[in-house]
Image (cartoon, rainbow, N blue to C red; front, side):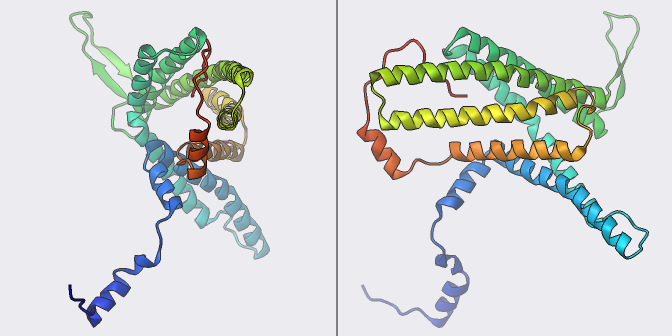
Length: 307
């Protein structure tokens, strides 16, 4: 087979159009695509951006006040802060809209609960209650969103004949719908403490059972990974709890919006980190170690639980 020397145009095309040949495939890029390609991953990333911007707004306004005071100007607000606040509001609005299919994941989860054996009866009932709380949360949030954007009318007449002789007047208040929606979520957060308590018991039981049988390095690594996920979930829930109380009482508990934004940012970063770790591919070394340490499954009454 004869070799044809590339022409000048081919070399130019390879240089310009094929400039990405200078880059090698990156595991970081693959991981980003794999994680941010999911609804959960993209939502957590936009949550980090949203609450970072909300924390920037008071800082930009304070800088503007100091600068205007130094130069004896009358304007006390920052135009940059207004633009940043607008972007944060747009992201928040978009994240609410993206949650419109969130109820489908809850229904799938609740169906799965009833068709798959759970570690304990108590854990099953906790998750059932959590599922029902989210069944209340999503529709109420969706209605609040649609009413607040004037997509659904806040007042309408409903004809219930022949059950009622008179037509009924239906009123939808976006604020009240949002309040009851977040109260459903607050119930979920409160139940999560009971869920985590059960998770702790299961982890301890699994660790003791494996230790009696002779703990292998791969098993120890898996136990440590699960404990790390447990403490991360516990910390996230401890931060979510005051936020849930704050919003479910009409945003009266925490006086400063910056504190609310900061707590939400911490939760978003920790949740993003947990999801990032969960979607990481195992390294070749860890896979080889797992294969080398394969053992027969241990017969035990209690098994570990993956949240």
